Image (cartoon, rainbow, N blue to C red; front, side, top):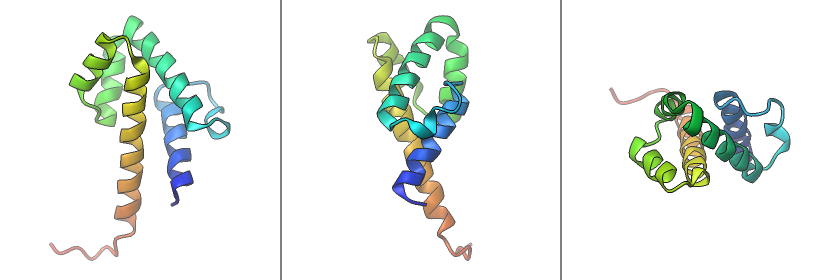
Length: 105
């Protein structure tokens, strides 16, 4: 899996998780996906914060980081943190899949 594959994975996963406009992720740049995500975060923060925090927990984004970004009125910062965490997860998954499966247990 390449960097481009990781980015496509992240865009698709975010589209599904945050119910972004379906079908756009493969044609949009990561910056466009981040903007759409920031808009969705703002809506969730205003109307369904519990759902937002459930999603953040699932992705493993710090609640403290989310609280700071939302308190500052900066959903773009939170969107960036979410995307960074998703890319990190994709890299980890890729590196673990390269393991030969013969761990030292």
